Image (cartoon, rainbow, N blue to C red; front, side, top):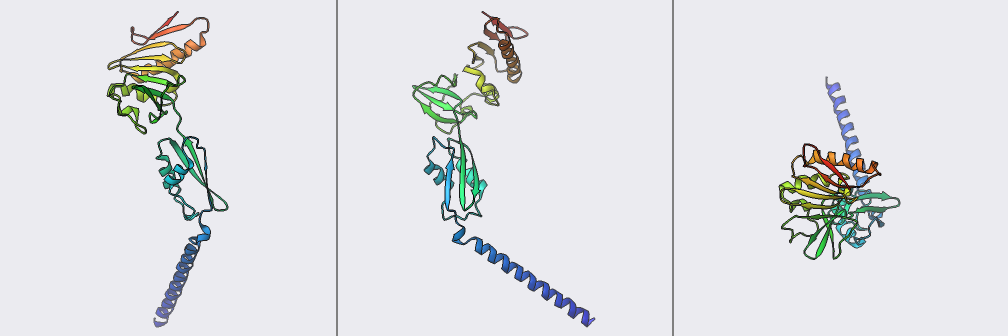
Length: 246
């Protein structure tokens, strides 16, 4: 019995020494990897045209004093994406000891007039810029009240009524945004102008999703029928929408 206990104790001591040695080795490796020789050597920023590289770099909080191996990429990407003009950012490591920041800037997809200037809005409904002139290639949204205090970084949905947002949320979802030239959002109804100048009397904000699906089908019909020119779509004229030709 004594021999067995002595043997067991020796094994425990042996395993304990191995564990301590392993911890020491791992600690030495960890300390070695944190030496200044593993600090970032260069930081390269790609994809920006509106946002200054200095702004992106400052927001990232990355410097050449940071460790190349232990960068928290998700946290850095999150910080950079908080910049109003940045859609998203991607961080990559590149040997030897280089960090590459790839950014995609937000692009204007629509505009809204406030007094004598225009605010540019991206495909997510975020206000990203302002302009003194109307950009004719962008969807123009009218009818939203109480937008005098709108500013960069705001979302257009926060200024529209609950009824108006029924339509706005659907239009800003997917590719619907690029099918229209103008949207006039009145209190109880909406009027639209398609990219091909066809006027759409959209009517009330009821059954918005269904009405937009029907409108998509009617747009396809207009594109397929080149023998005549459509001028108007009446969504609530009767039991079914009515397509009017010139």
